[in-house]
Length: 305
Image (cartoon, rainbow, N blue to C red; front, side, top):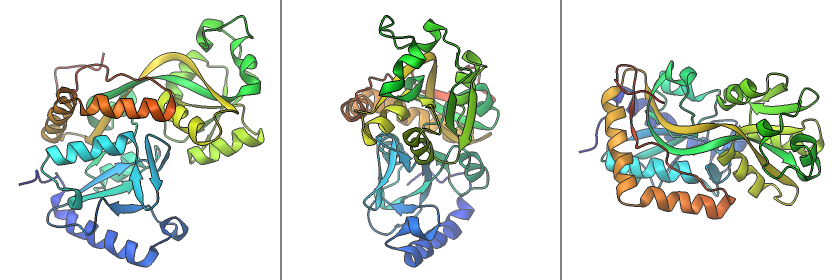
C-alpha cells in the first residue's frame, strides 16, 4: 500500500479540483490561467500524491506536449514509486520559487521536487530530503557581453569571483523566491537585481537588453541556454554551491526519512546517475549528487554542511 501523505484528508478535494480544471481547460491549460495539473498517464486510480514540479525550467522541469518532463520530474517519479504510488496515482502541479512554499504549506502538494536549494533560509520554512543534485551558482549572459563580466580573453576560468569585477553597472534578472539570488548577492553585493515572476520573463529581458544577465543555479541556466539559443548565450560560473533537496512540510520528518531512503536507492541502483547523464547530454553541464542523501529536518542531528 502507498504511504499516505500527511494531509491525506485533502487529497479527495484536491483530486476533484484537478479533474474539473482539466475538463474546463483542456487542451490549452496555459491559456486558462490556471496552474498546470496533470497525471502521468490516464486518470488517477486509488490514493494519490500531489508533487510540485517546475514548468519553465528546460531539462530540469518543463511542461511539454501535455506533460511534465526533465530531471526533477524523473526524480519525482522514482521517489513516488518507492513510496508505493503507481504512475496513475501521481498528480503533478506546477510550482514556481515564489509559490512553492505556500502550495506545500496549505496542502496543495505533498512534496516539492523543483530545484529547491537547501539553505539556511529554506530550512527555516520546510524540511528536506537530499541532496539529490549539486551544482553551482551562475549567470546566463549574452555571448557578446562575456568579456564585460569576466575581464576579457586573458581570463579563461569563467569565474566571476576570481576576476573580482565590479558589477555595479549590471542589471541582473532573477526569479522571485529563488534562494540562489542570496548566494550570488553575498559575493556581489553591488549588483542590481530585478526580480520577475518566471524564467521566461528573464530570458526575454536578456534577449531584448533590459537585463544584462540572469542569475540562478548552473543547471537551470544551462537548460535555459540550450532551449533559447546556445549560440547567443553562455553560462558563467560563480562562487558557491547549490544543493537540490526534496521539500516536505515542516515537521514531517517521517516522510522526509522515507524520501531520503528512496533517493539512496536511486543512487545505489544507478538511476540517479543515469538521470544526471541525460541532464548532461541535454545541457552540456556535468553535475554531482553531492553528499549521501538523507533527511534534513528541524529535529535531526545532521547538518547541511
